[in-house]
Length: 284
Image (cartoon, rainbow, N blue to C red; front, side, top):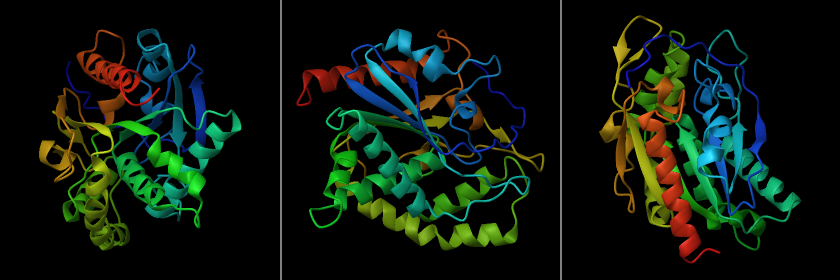
């Protein structure tokens, strides 16, 4: 399937967790996290209005409850910018997921995360934080990490110091990036490098797939660029991982028009396989 080269417009953020599909006697919760300039529904919606998490996936995986999570990752001058840090976004993600699952007594249910672009960096921070919680510090939040069984990172830049530059380039899909924003991201590069060191020891706890784009994305300045190629899309030193190419650009990595899309089939089968392993393994 070819790549969409049309320039995407920034989307208005909708913060919080939203249930898209309740599932049929669900055995797993799926939580999708968008990337920069994203929206918890529109980011996953193709040009024909198909929101595959809601319109395609339930027919193939009926025993999953499906959520989409939104946070303010707006970067364009046309939208109000959030002053929250990646750390803040990670804490909010933990709190929203834990509270939702506590509210209906499903805290022990396994979780599979689908994270696009910057959403993957937020998720990694959340897992690192949740793994450090103990009896003296919100032990209940440990379930966020302990019940995470599978992760699909889609177009997430993982390469430490290089990740900051990748984020600058992803920002520039929609608008020219200010020098101030570039400086801020570069200053975060050490934090992103530290994240790799903190994440690697726990990475083997999760069944993981890494997806990367095969087509360049058109930027606001008219250039085209392969934003997250294979080498950037994989966590260095992570275990239990598999890198997989998708035949799309960075924006359309998480948009599928119908069930015949080979990229949709790849992601759906990965999720289905994870659920099969969870059901047949140590998780009940």
